[in-house]
Image (cartoon, rainbow, N blue to C red):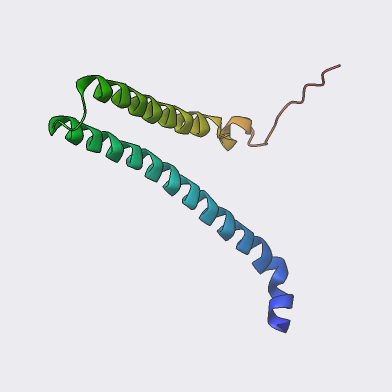
Length: 105
């Protein structure tokens, strides 16, 4: 207990960083799982159509919905990756970080 209190200024932020990394990994894994689940649904739909369980009209409607869902998920992932700020964009040639603030009236 005493050791934990004495090392908290160092272990506290490190624990927070580890927790944040775990959360990011969990979210990325769940998003990939979501896309994979929709792809599995698409494959099951194709098998049902091939076996004659559903009509061609129903197949085309459901296939389009699943393909649009996959496309939307992929676009969302790309948008999230594009929103990430690159630290190099704020570092000037002399090695100092810089940014500007715009005040709106």
